Structure formats: structure tokens, C-alpha cells
Image 1 (cartoon, rainbow, N blue to C red):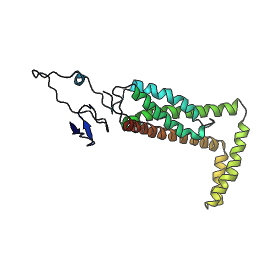
Image 2: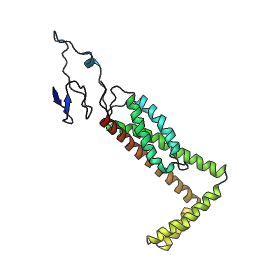
Image 3: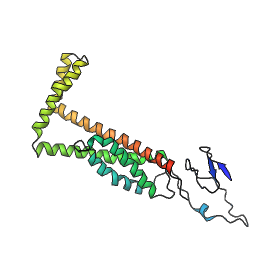
Image 4: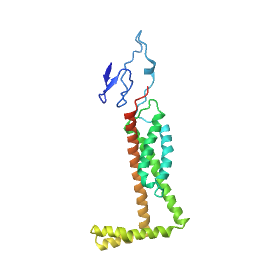
Length: 225
């Protein structure tokens, strides 16, 4: 016998307890108390809502992947150019690890995005902290402050000035902007802005990775009974 899912209207076989397309549990009428009609034991077991999250294993999976991913996504990591992609992959894999520990092994896209958000918060914080500590160590312990200052000065005086000129910015505005950027406050503000951009970008990619991981699981796996 075939029935139709009330959520996605796809065909569900009679032996399935969940819709294989969206994971909605089937509505089963209890025969408890009716003589001669024993209740199957599997219907007495509580059904976990796929949109809710058991946060203890979810956070454990997020921490396991977010911290090493954050280290690899810092600005001075040799693979930092792939940082956003790495964080998305870490969030997607955190969803996979979480789902493997659940019964039934099913999750909605929204729940996957929330696990990705937690992974992104931890990973972006780790990436920002690692970048800041590395900058501090390189400037004050490795005495590379002059290298960073010279690099920043050349970048502002050449590349940024040429870009502003090509955009038609007047000379007075360019001079004022250069003076601010080359001041200690300007250098610090520019670096903090770059770290903030990195953290926000990693967070958004992690949310997307978590949602994508849940979506791929929904397509490739059926709920376990």
C-alpha cells in the first residue's frame, strides 16, 4: 500500500515510518486499549523531531572540527587562501558527525545551519585570535615590525593611490586618507577591519556549509527505523 506525505506529497511505502524525501514521521493511529489489536512496540518509542538538536553531541562535533579549521583559516596560515572553503567543509562534516550519533539519523536544513553557525562562531574566533597572536609575536618577539610598516606604506602610497586616482578621487581627499591610513591608528584600524572581515566571512560560509551538509544528507540517506 502506498500513501502520500502530507508535507511534500511524495509517495511513501507502507513499511516506511518516515517520508524518504523530507523525513516527516508518518501519522500512526494507536490501537491501545482495543481488544485483540496489540500495539507494535516500535510505535511506543518516542520519535525525535529532526528539526531539534541534541546540543551536547552537536557541540562536541563542532569543537572537534572548528578549532583546527580556525587555525588553518588564520591570515598567516599557508592554506589561508582556501579558508572560507575549509570552514564550510568543517561545518558540513560537523553535521555529518552529529547525524551519525543520532537515532533516527535525520536532520533538517535549518538544524544543519544552526550547527554550522556554532561551528562558524568557534572557528572564526579561533582564526581571529590566532591572527592577532601571530601579529603580536611577529612584531614584538620576532622584531618584524619594520617589515610590516614598510609593506603597508608601499601599499598605500602605490597601489591604493593609483586605485583612488583611477576612480577620480580628488588629490586633497587622497592626501587626507593616506595620512590617516599611515598613522598608527589607521594601521591598527585597517588590520582590525581585515580580521573582522575574515571572521564574518568564515561565519557565513560555516552556516552555508552546515545547511548544505544537512541538505546532502537528506538526499542521500533515508531515516533509520
